[in-house]
Amino acid sequence: MALQSTHDVGIYCRLSRDDNNGNLESMSIGNQKQMLVDYVKEKGWNLRETYVDDGYSGTNFDRPDFKRMIQDVKNARIDCIVTKDLSRLGRNYSKVGYYTEEFFVDHGVRFIAINDSFDTNREEDNDIAPFKNVLNEWYPRDISKKVRQVKRAAARQGKFMGSYAPYGYKRHPENKHQLIIDDKVADIVRRIFNESAYGYSGRRIADNLNADGIDTPKFYSAKEGNGMPVRPTEKNYWGSSTVLRIIRHPVYIGNLVQGKSQVTSFKNKKRRVVDRDNWIVVENTHEPIIDRETWDRCQSRARRTRNRESKKTNSISLFAGLLRCEDCGSKLVFTFKPRKKGPSVGSYRCSCYNNNGNHACTHHYIQENTLSAFVLRDIQIHATLVKADRERITQQLLAGINNAQQSSMKQIDKQLRDAESREAAIDENIKQLYEDKCEGKLPESIFQKLLNGYLAEQAELSKTINKIRDQQNEVKIENCDINQWMDTISGYMDLKKLDRTSVVELIDTITIGEGRMVNGKRRQDITINYRFIGNLLEHAKEDII
Image 1 (cartoon, one colour):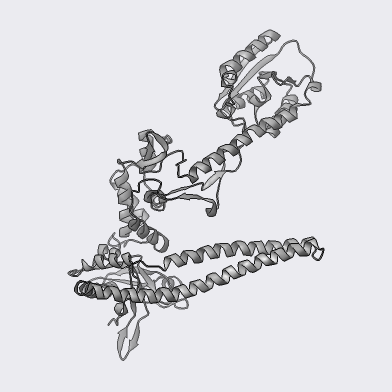
Image 2 (spheres, one colour):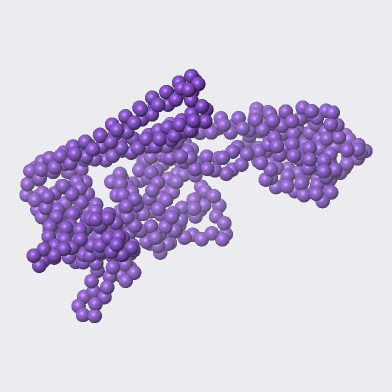
């Protein structure tokens, strides 16, 4: 590039939080600008334009004034760019190299970084530039790594590290890493969980909130000045996904789950989902809004059911989400058929049969009023028994539970022993593989193939072992669960008509068998699985006429 006596110059200044390395004053935008203006005046050149990106990282080039400067280069408004040093242009080695070695040269633009003695018109002085660019990129990479480590360490200590507090909470005024309940909307959270436990779908809950004019979490946070601003085109409207996200969030029982995603690179803001095994979970970090029982009921419903409201009545059917087919395990779905003569009838049948026909399953049909009468009678029987002789019933339940636990635990223990035995065998096989390879008995290609197979199997075994250990905990029913069931059902001794509230409070699931004719009478097995105690009562099955 030929030397010119004068230039139309654009000076470029940039500063971000990453650049605070203890010498903030000398790095400030004001000092950068003054230094560059003095330099241009000293050279006697024409200062055509000033470009400033304050608060923008050098790791990416999506900066407003940088893009404006590049457009001015393309339009030939400037033929020289001056910065304080190479890192002001950017901290991405490959991108800085592209602009200094290709783009500016191709467009006839001279680039000068004063403190680094870099000048595209003096190639003999620029040999050290690539190394400086590498160091400039290394700096934010190192800072990003250290910041991430500090944040994860703080998260493991139970400190809240999110940008915004979850709906229903706010940051403690004296400790931004501590969550406290936001009394303004905590009752809305409780309402959502209570309606879910009652059996409402996410869509129904959202419709109720919209009908009452409740602000969505995003609009509420924006009004309080604690969240992202709302775009003019956005609507203050609850959706089922927002409701379900709240229902599934462990923060409402006092637990923090953090580290679920992380940036893919310090050079951009894109994020990737982190494997669940690497999430940071700390329990009892703050006051819960929801009690554990309500939480467990909502999670159980979310995993196993999807309640649907009757289009005819616009209400949830009495046993929605609770009925299971005895043969295929599918849900039973509600249908409502009006009759020309007599009252209309609601009934349930196997969803697998409904969707796939009798080659997949049979209909397992049962009328709602018939099932309701059976369940009501069963509840009344057990309520009366508990009221009359609570101690004896408790002992019978404990004996039945212990027998069931022992049977289940034997199976689970065997599964665990088999899995752990296989895991130990794989460790020995891997050890032998390495020995065979070192002794030259095994080619590299075969070694890698066998090793990868063992490692994959070992990873699956590790997941299996964790699941089995979870099952061990699930089969244990504590005495307090039995007492809780006793307290709950004893209050229903005088129940005359079954309603949705009593069904949800008392019953976990009901298994429906296929109807059959026996001696000219229709019979059908029904197994009631009560909350807390399951189906251990012998008279939970009865013939239905």
